[in-house]
Image 1 (cartoon, rainbow over the protein chains, first blue to last red):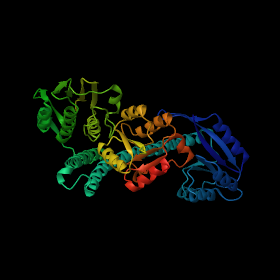
Image 2 (image 1 turned 60 degrees about the vertical axis):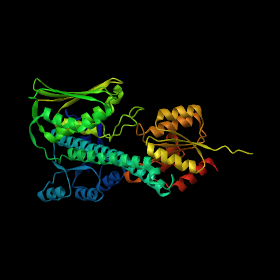
Image 3 (image 1 turned 180 degrees about the vertical axis):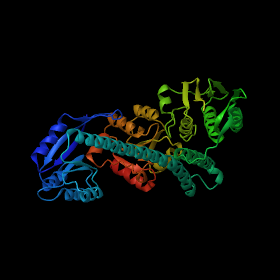
Length: 373
Length: 132
């Protein structure tokens, strides 16, 4: 149960105790709120007393009478604004003349309750406020969480970008110091490693560009019927050289009619990522099967490899940004850790599901199911 | 002839290039070096030998592998000083320090260093921790 702290400012004791009684057994609930709200009421007889309480306690709502013995309600309201106190103010006054109403609204009063009011009027007013506060709290919470995710992303990104720079810089310094001798050939390994690290960094930057385009929704999408066999075929050609190196057989099993409405580029990114993983994590002399099928209008893309596979616990982490499953077997395989999270982001655009079936040492199958569109 | 035993430093980092370069630098300082690229390898090493000091990368298999290893090493050898080196620092705001008693309680490391630290500074810090 959530509690809303409410301050009643009124010089009439009858009003104060009346409000207290009305709110004692009152709670606000909405289907979309996780919890009910009820009210904790504190009282102030004068504006001066109200200001003292506002300085020392946190309130969610102030019910403020305008006509008070010392300073007026409107001055309390001005104080709240000047101090930027985060509280919702409702004016209660029997002198709800137009000019006070205008002035109070200008000073940020949220609502009015005319005096005399019925318990129902007060409850209605507070019900709206509770809803408003709930939404405000939710938005704040989401902003904080969003910032946190962004922050995590940036810290991992800076790590991933700085590591290759550090590595290359280190090698250059060793060369500068002529650590291995005077001949350029003495540094062949260092030069090769530097070039490898630079290549990795380039692919990270390219992945990152895809990633941010999708993330920001700024990528122009061109949705039209796409023949997936053609797309898969083009991507197969791209990985062919790597397949030859590792002696991997790659098979495309599909019916020419497997088409669906999509953005060709996005489909290429998906196939490129899935296929390059299937090659990278495969065994020497392994096999890759690409199966494209239709099932009840859904389009199914499945890529199966005979590679190192992975544990169930690793599958869950697979689609997070920058996650790479690190083990004895993967430590010499390079990757940016963004590929599958890009696949996931694109799949989300199509409300497609991704299923990973894997057995350590045997291989993995990635199945994407695109619902009919 | 009196033979002076070299101090042994354990280096753990999943970046093979950084590990290679760091071992050269540390050997140049006159220390013996043992290296590991995973948490598992590091655990195997400390089973067999007690290093005089350890330098651990923070982000390896997981973002906090460095902390975990640190904990394991301190449990086994409470007197071995540990440096955690990380490429993640100031610009992301992700800064750890071991100056406060509170962080000392959960981060068992003796020192945090940026991976970009100059070799002579690193040498100074190592000597300080080894009380040379």
